[in-house]
Length: 414
Ligand code: SF4
Image (tube, rainbow, N blue to C red; front, side, top):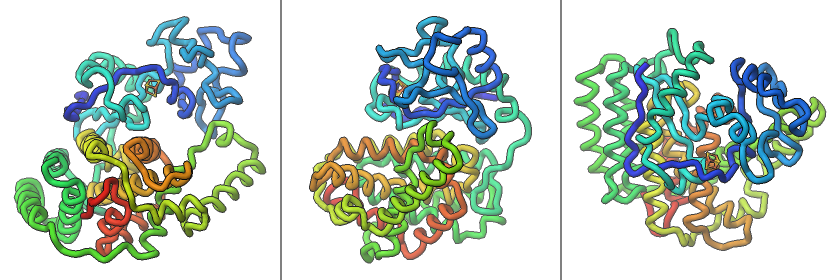
């Protein structure tokens, strides 16, 4: 399968060895990874077993301090130091990239929970193509079930499969809409909302290929004209759903918590349920403070950063289909719009938790990392309840009203 490395304008990456991924990620191992680690003979040389069971999977073990068992005190990977980069598990070699078969190609995605990706630091992405090509081959050999054979078709809307060409046409147009940086981001998002709403009302079962492209172009023109209608403020129910959605991103389960005994895991889940209620109902002091926080010290840099993130999600086909819980294009795009309001709220929550009265670019940077760590990966966000939440918020301009309630910069209203 052809490797498609999208040109995300200006996006760069070079691993700076911050070790965030060595502490935060649960690394799933393939049979080949396990055999390679066994062949390296780590018994007695590391702090505990090299890998452990997690449900039906085998994952790299972590120490009690949360770091990977192979992370040395000077922040280096011991497998890398002693046996070379190619001896590391495939998931470690791939991060912060992702590989998903979509639209007739192997799409390369990139994760913004890596601080270096978010900061846009390092070499242009094209310089990673040779390594990614080698990795793609190794991964499809190790996990053929994920990369070859029949796939569930990606849907344009529930019940309406999309052809590869239709997906490419939609991605191109949505990216064009997001790329128009002379238009304020909230207006671009408003246009995207209008586009998804109108497309959702069309009889897509009978509109295909060329006709779909014509409809898309027509809707793009209509969406551009929709700048000025007034919006009611977000109501209490919409805000509560947004806080619930934000909470689903916040709880990052460690390997130790994931492997806890039944009783310990029950107690963790009970605590999680309590925290979720406190945040959703804004009973938690920081949540209440975040909800009321209006002043922003964030700058135009946050707008450019969030635009880069959104374009990366769209251009890498990571907002729908196999990379996003099998969701349809329209549901995935709505969830992408909701992600921006979630970033706005999480930035406020981070500032409020630190006792500050306003948020800034660093809070936005952090919030995008939190959102991207969970997007397409956290089970709660792919559950039926999450899809119902997005569907509910799509009505009565709920998504736009939430963007207006939690803007990422001052004086930015959709
Ligand atoms: S989080 Fe990113 S920069 Fe830090 S060690 Fe991992 S890949 Fe490298």
